[in-house]
Image 1 (spheres, rainbow, N blue to C red):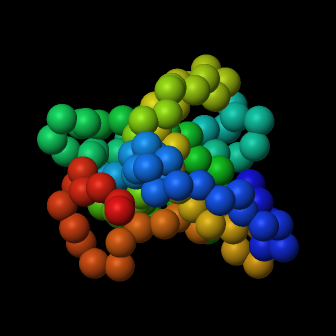
Image 2 (cartoon, rainbow, N blue to C red; image 1 turned 30 degrees about the horizontal axis):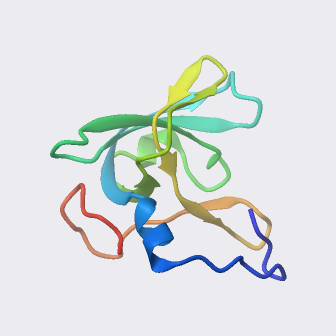
Length: 119
């Protein structure tokens, strides 16, 4: 992850379009104490042809599992699945670091249909 003082490498718009970022609604969330860093296991519903996907997110500083269902988040849905301990993460849930480097989830400010693509 680039820090604020690091210049980002320039990419073309076509490269950006290769990253499939979609909105989905968290339908399940539970602690994942077996992870190396404190994490929460999520099931996110992207609707339509994508359906429900699993993700592991290091978001325990600002979020509790019981508060997450119903929240819409953005995630990259076209990365290959990644093994996180004994859990297979199917999408990369997106967030930004706060002033202390802890993850804050990214999502729409108003409700939008699940599966919508970020452009």
